[in-house]
Image (cartoon, rainbow, N blue to C red; front, top):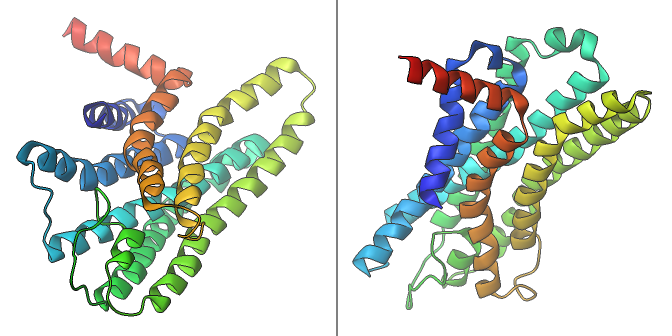
Length: 278
């Protein structure tokens, strides 16, 4: 899974970088989505694989907090980059005549800056609250990585503040992008239904289908893990859910965008033909 994740995401990043016709707002955000997927999978999977090989699943306190911070930074960034991509699709379909003006390079950079600022803020809030806790007695974390809920279970001090931060920050990090995506697609659907030709409708739907699949996979598994009381979700079941959005989703995203995107297929063929000719 990790090899496919690395090859798929770095391959997509390389394709977008090498092909000038892909230097558009849509592929600018897709470039960053692939970068984020590669990074947050790399924060978790190599350490897990190393533990499998050495048969010693051990991590230091500082290493655990570092992994927690970067994992949260990239996961929160992914949720906001997906909402930025939804806004991009809304402008492209609902206001195509002013698309290049509305989604200018400056606007795209500001949106991207907002994505990473929200990622940093969310990661800092959770990590700072985790650093104030004391861990004692049994330090066996019931997980394959340092995540928020398994670490809270190991604390021997009150976690009420942390739990409040989880519900507030996770609510914002999932709620704001979700609302943005729903509003964008509600406007997109109303615009699509006004298109008279069947060919025009199918073309509009095809530009959004990959993004809808990616959003459903990521937010579905994330909400299942974090937006339920721990009493209703056993940790073993939570591990399965987090395995899905930390290992499977980063692997599937480049496949989804490659198989369902004609521009990416054309770019891949051109790149392969150039290399074979050389």
